[in-house]
Amino acid sequence: MKDIIFVTSNKGKIATAQSDLKNIRVLPYEAELIEPRSDDIREIAEQKVYQAYEIVKKTLYSFGFWFFYQGIKRFS
Image 1 (cartoon, rainbow, N blue to C red):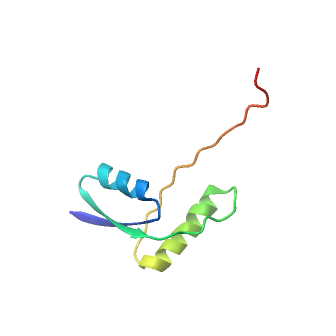
Image 2 (cartoon, rainbow, N blue to C red):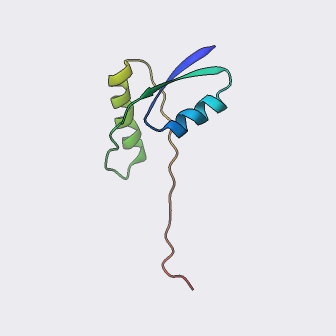
């Protein structure tokens, strides 16, 4: 079985990864990563990967899930 180190402070993400990745052992590493202030999701992901690498010193894979919301100007 392969291992991945999952750097996050979100216990829900860890539980989902452990449930969904059946043939991979998820090794949680709890850490609060700083969320950069930016509208550029690539920049945010890169900065968080750099932070995580400084913690674990191992090859990393980053995945994110971003919601985009376009507000409704008026309700009728």
